[in-house]
Length: 354
Image (cartoon, rainbow, N blue to C red):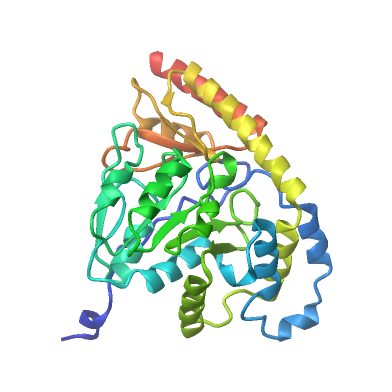
């Protein structure tokens, strides 16, 4: 047996392409088109470089308190990490420790199966309905845990709170994780259910609605016992997961609720305009509750449209996967960026008619 036979091999998650050139319209990774709160810039100016020689607070107490205060929770109900990916990975390690398979949708965030394979967690995917909706009844069989995004990614469709509760209430012996990366753009949060159910974990990110993708900040909210278990795993893995600047800047960000709400409202307004523009061009799409739309055209191949837009320095996301290989996921940018996208699509259809 060679050393290579002893190496764990997995198929990694593939993130959206990060173009290395300037002058592109980047609509492929669901980043916020607006800068973070001005209070973040102010906090950055106030950082003391001499403090960087010191380890950060391993509990990230200032940020935990700010998150708890924002959502009306106790500090002991909040866990923070390096982006929601880090938080979710910790959740997988902590809560999915059973011989029974965990459940998640067949079309969803493609990191779930990567973590399951890496951590050797058995899993089953539940097929979305024809309209790409989640059927709560599919999640009421014996399982080792459940995770799903709301709104779902990459479809952008949300699940009403009553249907989320059906899943949580129907699985009292399993941990249910609701991944709310996109919840701030129009979906209902599951946070009110924390008062009723001790098996619920809600995760969120600062990358989308709070414009801090470059800092990597995420959080989980649950009952105090679940958060303690999460922290126990974290401190057994890496005590200092968040650095001092990130803690200070993220705290400033979440404290500026007025700016946060203003940005979300602008993105929702632009999303609705974009949906109208795409429908006029013949695209079929359902109303999104995320900061992206998921669109298909009945007469054109998504892969060809993707390639054409890329030639015009407009990046969108194409998934070469069953059931969704003729769809494009398009991040909502500024009004000007989306109008440029629509103009490029008009040119594409004119060219293809010649």
